[in-house]
Length: 384
Ligand SMILES: Nc1nc2c(c(=O)[nH]1)N[C@H]1C(S)=C(S)[C@@H](COP(=O)(O)O)O[C@H]1N2
Ligand SMILES: [Mo]
Image 1: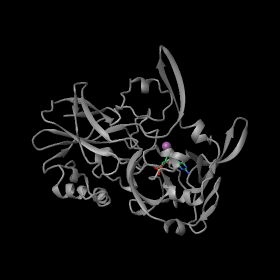
Image 2 (image 1 turned 120 degrees about the vertical axis):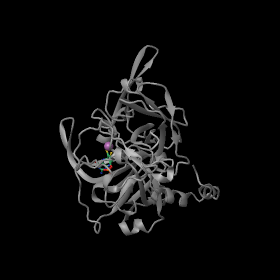
Image 3 (image 1 turned 180 degrees about the vertical axis):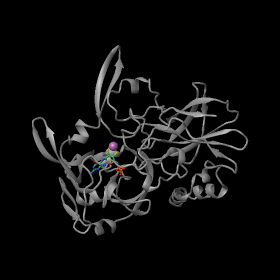
Image 4 (image 1 turned 90 degrees about the vertical axis):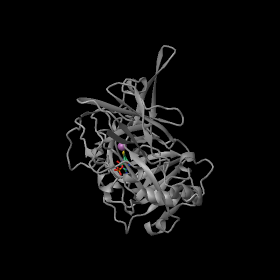
């Protein structure tokens, strides 16, 4: 339940202060974590064997709404480049009236903005059941849009391309080409107010694995768009088709239209609505408390429902207000009179657009032939 003072803070529109308070508070603030004395943790029995040194969200131990930086997964397709901050520069060029080269100090001198946003790899949960490639982080940096505006985008500039320092020779058709990791956004997407060039995560400088010294944070989009080790931003007058825009991270999905299946290839972009059962506690009164997270592209999460052993869907309690539309929201459900034995549990989230997270046999998943955008419901098993 919200406290009066929290409501008052909301009423005065002190949303930055509210977000900061949420960011620092453990789950107990939401009435979720280790709720009372005598509550015991019930481990899920479906836990996949994984390398304990592998960084990932450990759902069973999830107590903090903000993911500690040490637990955030990393993905680097071309390894981890070492960047010397002293000589590093960000270039902005292409179809701009005033090309610029900025040092890290110059970027840090620009207006500062913090944003709470969930980062998920679009391969999270695909096939392997590995569901730890997601995390909720407080990012600090400077907004992208005003910087692009200062450079004066030419009218024909419709595409903004972001290049990382990491590179590899890629075979494209018959030849090898040196390629930097790169992704683009349309001009319209790039000029959204809430995209930042981030130099901090959870109050610390970005570490090397997460893109030091500068990365793109595209709230609401899958991780592949969040280019790390950023070195160049280029505005161009036509669509950009790199490996990570147009060959990999391309979802092949069928849609049934009048008895025909239409196959579509789309570049991975904003996040689909998704949720996960995280933690299970047995309370002193014998009831079982399920807690977990739900997230998407920034559309408000409307509901999370829970189903045990294929029975009716139960509506979970959602933690409102969401401190940031782009950060995951926590939920909980108390099963008052649990039945002994082994059970399965699954959850599904729905958002304000009416989009419901699909089950594994939903056509949206069944007819998806690539593993990216694995947003299907993820069942778990436990023993009472
Ligand atoms: N330069 C660069 N940026 C990158 C990548 C990369 O390989 N190189 N991988 C992307 C992918 S696929 C994901 S899921 C996220 C992961 O971010 P993290 O390593 O900080 O968790 O970074 C994205 N940004
Ligand atoms: Mo990814």
